[in-house]
Each structure stands twice: as structure tokens, then as C-alpha cells.
Image 1 (cartoon, rainbow, N blue to C red):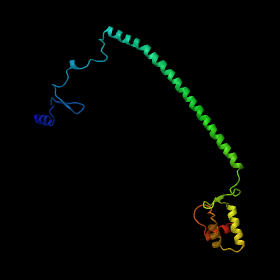
Image 2: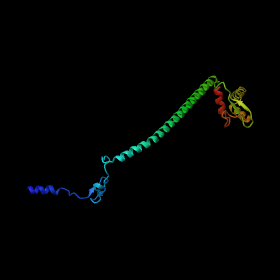
Image 3: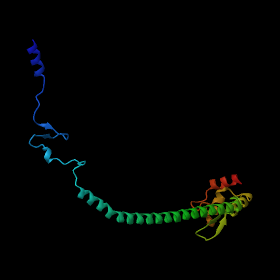
Image 4: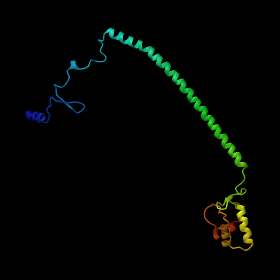
Length: 184
């Protein structure tokens, strides 16, 4: 029974092949594998010669003036960038001050400005070249209403005289005259 168990254990094992799977999912045969002498030498190999170390030291000594020159140039450029940044900042401050002065002047101007009711709005007749203000048109309407004219008669009179509407578009209508009379 002992032999039977051994056979059972051995029958479930996979046979290892000589072909090994590489990390990038490629199969490598033993002939394709590098042998230790083909591999790179260790970076920490202590067998480097003294002349190589001296050569590297000399290369670093030769690079020091170049590094110093580049560092000096970098410092100069950083100074220029700082000067330009300072000029930009001063320009932005002047711009902000100018905008503040503008809005302060506008605020003062608006405080002294007449209210919209005090200002006269002018309408222009492009056909006749005459100019009428809103107050002039309303006084014409009131005068005609006092004389007994109807809204339609007043609208026809204003259209015949070439007096434009307040918007400058369209025509005078009896309903428009009626609405103006209600507002007065």
C-alpha cells in the first residue's frame, strides 16, 4: 500500500520542462539563456582600477567651471525675470487705480445727473426733419383732447404731420394715444 500511495503522489505532479517562461511571457530555451560570463558585470564591482577613478575625478574637475558658468547665467536670468515680474505688478496696480478713479468719477457724475423724468427725450421725423420731444407730443395730444378730438383723429393728425412714434418705428394708433392719455 505504501507503493500505491507513492504512485498516486507522483502521478499528480507536472513534469518540469527545460523551457522556462520569461517575465515578458516569452519562452526561452536553455540554449538561448545567457551564461554568467555573458552577463554584465556588477556596478559595485570592487575590482575597478585606480586610473579609472582618477579619470572620473578629472572629468568632474573639468565640469566644475562649466557648472559654475551655467549657474551664474541662471542667476542673471532669474534676476531679469524678477525685474519683469515687478514691472508687471506695478502696471497692474496702476491699472487698478485708474479703474477705481474712473468708477469714482462715474459715481460723482451719476449723482449730479438729472433724473430720467427731468430729461427731455427727442424724437426725430426722418421725412420732415422736424424734432419733437416727448413733452411736445404729449402737449399736442392734450390740446387736441381739450378741443374734443378723438383718439383716432389725434393718431391720424400725428401721422399726417410726420411726427414719429417714441420708438421711431411703426405708426400712431388710437390705442397708443388712449394709453398715453391714461398715463397723464
